[in-house]
Image: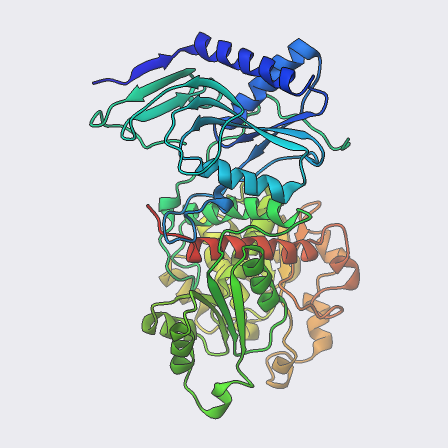
Length: 186
Length: 336
């Protein structure tokens, strides 16, 4: 069975516009808001949210990128190794409202790693989590503050997020087990 | 509000890792002769990320928590040893350092038995320096624990070769076709030894410059046998330095003077010291590097060592990032 498209480009855009509004509403404006995207696809999503807020509120919120490899809980536990990429958060997050952005929210382990990474960069006023897709199956007590779309899934299903800045197309798909194809991205 | 706020442009999106972790094939790092271009670039890519970590106010990531790294130096060293130890600490590994002179080696224990003891103590990676060429290879053959060679005799110093090329790459970009000159006591230099392989992997043209007495016997035959056709040999520094992108004088080991390999230090200074006049024969803005420790006024003049073209201090900083990358690749988790 081919992968089934759950969200197309327009759906993603609408979800992001709504999330951007919620961020502004929750933080009573955007003047003290900064965005940090988790590599790889959280970064362009964070940039798009910042762009929507710029058009809406005329506030240019800074956007950083975070590589969480050095903070993963599977590196030293004799599990798997990944290429470490450079993080780029060229602003001080202390006393700011940090909106952490990722594409798929699944076990919560990436977010745990990202929280540790952010703690090392400074003492944020608040850290809020915005995700495009929440597919459930949390393994840690972490929740999202802003969700583009809740998609209940089975564990063996595969959710793939394509973002045009990285993948040349905007869409979210689901694949049932046995469909073949790439690895899980979280 | 921080003044340093820059915004990433949407189009200037940062890319995927360009290299796959599966390229990494090493359990030990003994020399660079078995490093492919991709492997060297993988180390560089990870070193870039480590550079960001060591530029932070809080220089610590939890990556190697619960791992133990031993440094075992059978030769005096301050910079390499502290560089490896800081690299391990920044990655949250525990470190233990063995001072061989005071340890059981002085009581007659063999190298392998000392290393086996470390292994039995549960050490994950051993960083070793030894005055005998090849000692880390014997260690690697006899132990399960990973070995990183931090200098063996006159043979190899792989982390130095990597940090030299990493420093060059940060300033010159792609190194393919660039020209590097190493000048000095090539015979006794493990730095030159590892840089021969590092430059080969990256497509750099390397000129070795020294008086004939400081070049190994049968060098030309050896270069030919190992198909090191990127290397040229030149005795005259004023010729060798022409069009060079980077020049690296090696420390003149003073004990060599007694063994009669050079007629006098004064003559060596006359012919081989890197001076501003000589440096002006290289490409404009050519980079100066030195593996340290320097004998200022012998192989390098004071003006050159502290000129704007000198990256000698940056080499030390980059050394920590490169060694963090190596420790991550060697001591971190398995590859999928």
